[in-house]
Image 1: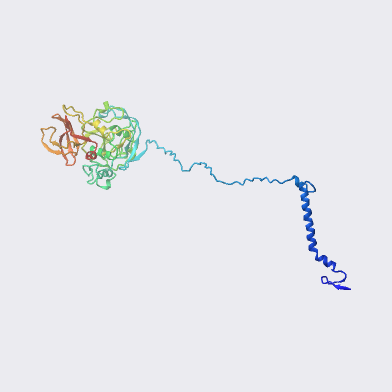
Image 2: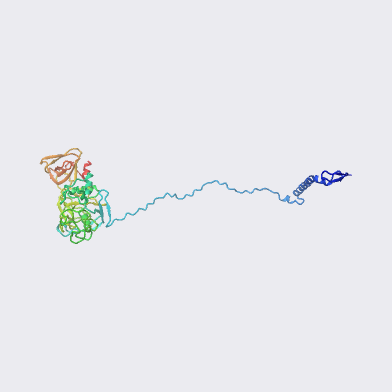
Length: 457
């Protein structure tokens, strides 16, 4: 008998309890697990034998893995900054100064006070004078370097000083042919005239300059070659200067460039006579110092140089000297120019030293004043000075000068009553007369270099 196998659908004999193929299929998972178990057991045994130094895995007994850690330095960046000091580019200003050019012939500079252009005259020797009477002897003089105004001082420049209260107006506002001159803008660039030596000096001091000495003026006009005129030795012509009455009056200060001096100074011959610092001494050249001479120590008139618009060929020579006017006088043919000297000064105390009057007056103090200078009444003690009609106590009292009041010295000195007497003009009230400088106990009048300095007291 046979029966049906539900697994595979076949008939199997009844004696087979299970269809064998079907049984094997059903037991396949068990067989796989059994085989795997046998493999694991065998492997474990082999490992055990190998660790004991036996069997195919004996290598396991000699290569015991001692784990010596290999320290791989993974750097920990602790940032400690190394400060490398590089120069900070804050520039250290090593100032290489732009060298100031050494001035020479042709150099100019401009005054910040009045706008005057000045030309440079270098140091050195030149021939001064001539063989004519008041100009002799011809002699060699050494002068330090200086700057001199290129032109005469103009009406416009001078008016600035008047407006500043440091100068007094010209004595007249007209010129030779013009009824309105000083106060007329049309002639602003023309030379100021009708100014005294005292007024010229006050102007120069206001600008920080001074009047030139005779020697300085002559060198600036003549140069070092002994020429007769600023332009050379050719006789004057109307293309070179304003003289001989050709214009019958002044012209602008910058005309006649062709007649300029070797240093570029204009109109040093003709146009207007020019005040210089020195007292006039006819024979001074005979014993004049040979270096930076400043003229006689005293005198009555001041020197004028250069000739003017009405002068002839003889008067416009660079060596011509005129001593016709006192320091307080002026006319329509006279002007001036100033000078700047870095090394030599003839103002202030040196003027007092050079120009103080020399007179013998027993019992009196040594005089400290000079004609053309200024003074004020000492206010310690505060006593007024009497002004008399003449030099001495026997003359009539005509007024008083109060302490601190400024005055101009216009004549003197005279000795009377054992006192030194000066003729003065009190500036505030225009009081003119004679007053004493002091007695044997002290000075009543104190010298000052300018009106503004006097008024400061």
